[in-house]
Length: 206
Image (tube, rainbow, N blue to C red; front, side):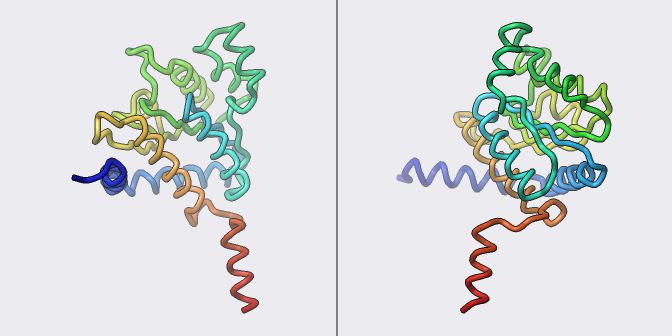
């Protein structure tokens, strides 16, 4: 019998092979356009995806030279908004204060993409409605059927829910692979990464 570790690895590889490369290219092109027009990138995520958002903010800023932010990085503001105004508007009001506009873009990391009908991740739904009203571009790396994010996105990468017992861990795990693909994409990568640069320097000295 296969070990669980082997099963999980095989599942992950299977999901990666089912991704649509054209969707990845569309998102890369869109984010490149954001940088060209001097726009900002706002990354939204809840739970584990909020942790992903913080990591990705670093990568898009440092590697791609795109001005990038995540509302979940300021815990004081986030919790004040949730406490005083409610969960549903904690992202949308943050975007309004940030004066989101047509040069900007929102990137969503989410297992389900949000659903008004199901009343799930309504803070993402409300934020995307705000972004759309402002004329900002919308992109997503999401799971299941993509939810509201896929409905309104300019381009969206949907991680297929192939293994129903492990949709969440696979979606969040593959999301990390996808955003690292994006920041490594020739259309987006603008600065070298440290270890690769160090290895190249050391090789040159040999």
